[in-house]
Length: 352
Ligand code: PMP
Image (cartoon, rainbow, N blue to C red; front, side, top):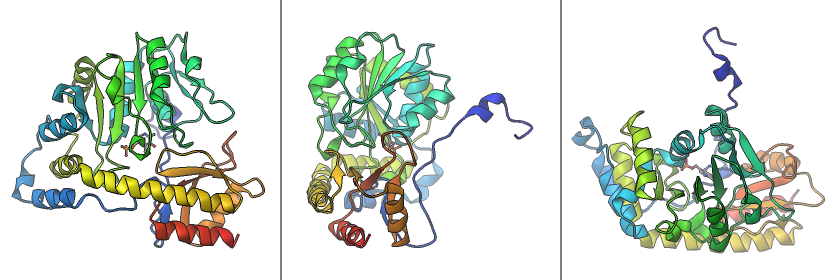
């Protein structure tokens, strides 16, 4: 251990992001990025921002982006918070709203960053198992003595979505704590809880430009909720780094949010490719969890997931394997690429 490390640093178990290997060009189906270019309007706006203006600090309030998001979701600008990827938004929410002494409830199979933040802020996780079909069971979230609840909808890495009525059950059962709904993948076919924001002051919806808007590279995420919840996040952010969105990201994100036609176009393409890929993988004997996302969670009854992962990597195709974990140890998470990339995947799987 380094001489200057505290026990706290030594005890951290940081998140390990999906592989981004540099040794050769892979078909990358492992980190849920979009296979499509960002909106041409976003690219144009970013190119224009690369100018002498970069000597100036960005707008600390990100007003153009907040206004664009508010318009898009029919909210007020004071119901919108923006941050450096939804990972930063989640970190601030965990610190501000969940580090209150009581445990934080979330599913036992979900986005693994929640456990990392919980560790960082000394929050005890209250893990709520998914049922045998990988569903979140909303009544399991009743009568909890917790600091808050995080629901991922659709869930990751399973890809399964909850109907809005189930989100409402969880909100009604937990009126005194923040219920954070992480909707990183919502645009690929799930129902968003944004429509419930004006009814439930304890609801915080978190979304990202990394997936459906094909902008993982500029790190922009946002939260939508009651003005008091948003104001809390602003206070936290301004106590750290009041310029989380740089000028280029701000310009690109604003243009991307305004380009709703392009969003629909690339989401529709991804959904169509997903449905086709599900058919093709099922024909090869895989079982696929029903997905409302830009990835599928797949297992083969007679084949070892780790072996498939390694064999595909050998052939230049990267998918996500999570290791020999309980319940998901024989599953692979496969991001939906272009039709051509998915055909290459099916062709490679046929040779195994
Ligand atoms: N939430 C979930 C469920 C995710 O899978 C991811 C991406 N790995 C994120 C949040 C974070 O996305 P970003 O920081 O790129 O906005």
